[in-house]
Length: 235
Image 1: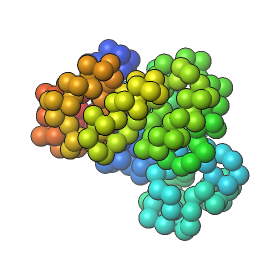
Image 2 (image 1 turned 45 degrees about the vertical axis):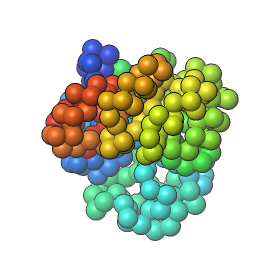
Image 3 (image 1 turned 90 degrees about the vertical axis):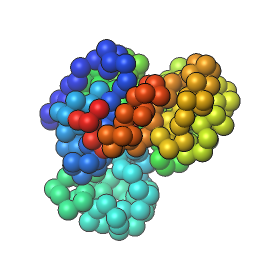
């Protein structure tokens, strides 16, 4: 298996984070997409995970398989064996497991693991703690803040971020209560005022999904800490 490496993300002022790998170029959330993102200069990647029927943590965005694969039905109702028979977006790429992703990247690559499905916290954390010696480059995030609460109960130190489409100021108090390190808001919700308030609270901002030159320029001017994008080469 190829090993994906990257320059140290800590050396840059703004993290360049490939959205589901390099979604704008290669079938999303696949090993090929992750490799492409790093090849295009990403400091790290954002991926999504579910727990499948046989218990493995798999990397996929949608709850339903129909749109993105050759299969149908709910991903959580399929075994890993069944999922491995599918292909993603008319390519030869398979749905990878979280373990396969971790084994394919260098430990210095920033990895944002979004917990999409329920009951993903424990299995994902176990994989990270078992297979990564230094988890400082790992960030867990989720729209489902209850899943993040489950994660925090399991590990008091792992880095977490709250994802929101609403005014990100509303996420500050819950984030601080969970000892989070960041809020991951939509770029559309950000302005100088709420960014200043979030930073004053000690939280970082990793915004999504920023794809145009104008959007990227604005986010850099506002001073976000990381940009999640389908096109890492633009950052």
